[in-house]
Length: 54
Length: 238
Picture 1 (cartoon, rainbow over the protein chains, first blue to last red):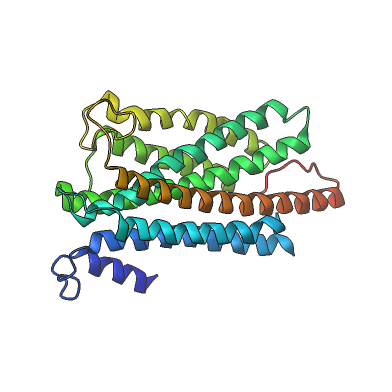
Picture 2: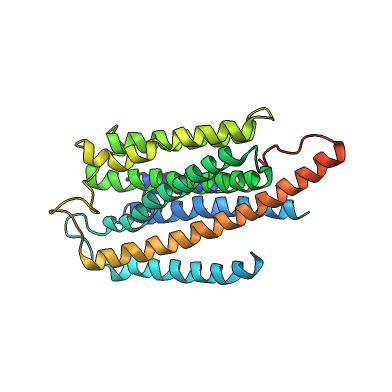
């Protein structure tokens, strides 16, 4: 989570040296965060499903 | 369920890859906003699908309330279906609320504004988070009935979200679907939008199916435990 939050913050800060040259960081970030949320939920379901099988 | 899972997963992955290709490489670059407009393909899909999954939750909640005394077994199925759809709708709503500000910042110059569309969407998200909190933390006994009633009232916000850009002048753009004579999109943008809508719909159905199946198993386990301890068995799987 710490790594992820640092990644998000670095992408949001316009003055960030690494991401400043990247024109479409908002587009990339929207794509990444969409999949993070969706796959996070999928992983939670998977864990619940495995627990229910026992 | 098991027979369907892998073919449906394969279909979903194929659609997601093709939708990604459409959104990032095939659809034309929008003249005014440039490449940032490509968020639209995810935003459009998530915005429509959250309405669909909340509608399914609404219908299942009504079904639960109708049959909860006459047919408890079917009521449990309605309840599990309602919960699975509420979770999926809330996840799509969360992604909409993430994508929106990321699109707004470069286009509007602001992350957020309290206009009717944005505010009603945030309220919708909070209503369904409250629904999930009720499911998780309410004292046993009336949880399912309380949740079903909350879902029915909560769904009233969905038409407000949908109509907000028609009823009020908002910062959010006017509708591009059924928006009147001057609305509409380039056919190539429509193609990419619908491929992504199909991909996310397949994804949503997959997760709702797995969750519904898992909830059925949890309910069965709870009933076995309740029968063993001679307790009433009609409490919700959480």
